[in-house]
Amino acid sequence: MSYNTTIRSTDPKAADMLKENLAHKEANNAYMQKINDYYKEHGTVAGCPDIPEETAAELDSRVTESQSTPYPGSFFKRNYEDIHRLEANIRRLEDKPETIFKGWEFNGGEAVINLANNRLQLRFEEKPTDEQRAAIKQQGFKWAPSSGSWQRPLDRKAFSAADKLDFIKPKDGKNPSDLQPKQPKREQPER
Image 1: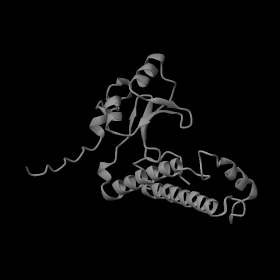
Image 2: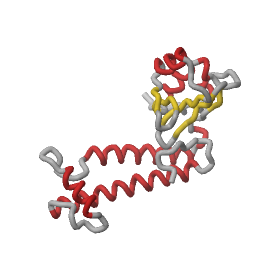
Image 3: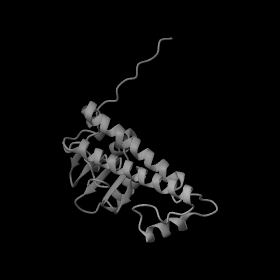
């Protein structure tokens, strides 16, 4: 399963891995909805089909005066946001592969486009110097021990920030934003 792993836009199986993540998120939503529906009907999760008693007891303990079901709406909201992001990335990969951001190699590391987590990740072969780390932080990148990389949300601003870091420029000397596909122009309505 490719859930919570780096999915590179250049990987030929990227769309399939994103679809696998999407199926996981949708199954998670269905599970949470099943638990909440059962709780609303019976006032407890105990006895819900396919739910072990220990899990049911833990889910029941989540319900408080401020939370009326085992899974509050914020769980669903985050899941739906992930689902919509994954669907958009799948559409972009399948319909217009030239609109997906591209990573690059630089002296001493690489910049990776992680579609699964929607991040631009900087991976270094050796620990960056204090000055480099300060510059990376100044450009909005944060250290993520879980992925062993410096990362920030994947958007056009991330590439503008990367342009300001000379030590991560691609080996061909271009700016990182120059490697990215150009944003299509919007059609202006007639006035």
